[in-house]
Length: 207
Image (cartoon, rainbow, N blue to C red; front, top):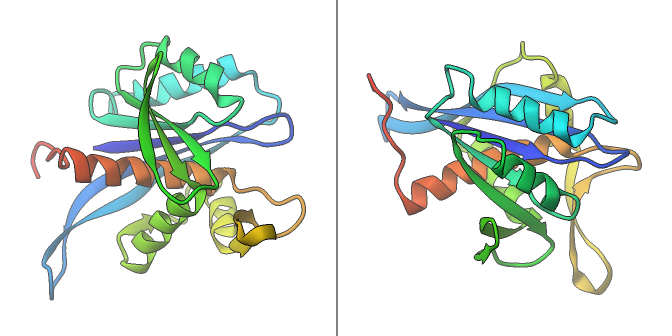
């Protein structure tokens, strides 16, 4: 099963796409079988790319023969993402899609919208999910992929800070830094975690 995360950028921010694959692996000790996520694709869409082209690119990825029929898409539906979410829903992607509104709140919850279910998820929860997977050795990032260096840099630079009135601020540490790739990765990992907790993870043929 593949999980795709899409972070939608604006004029000065990149849109980013990350694909992770669930694989069942074995350990020699302790729990001999566990599920790991392998990052299979990392892509930063060029600045200024029209959203219609971003939608077309996502459609091409999720309808690729390797992913078609066995993938789930989580897209950032915050702010400018709302009309793009509608474009994606109309694009006949052929996969499950969930819109995620990224908030600064403390809890995640879901609600119904005109186009379907939408989740509201705190940004710190998204990033904490990635951190937990990395600490457990359950998230694997291959070194030879394009843009993987930028992803690793974002993972290192991202920080959680307490701002005014005790509010938690999560994002890249430093002026001009980006967190688009790490948010796309976090959305993909969140989609995997949600599927596992709500429905169980479907076993792939041959596993």
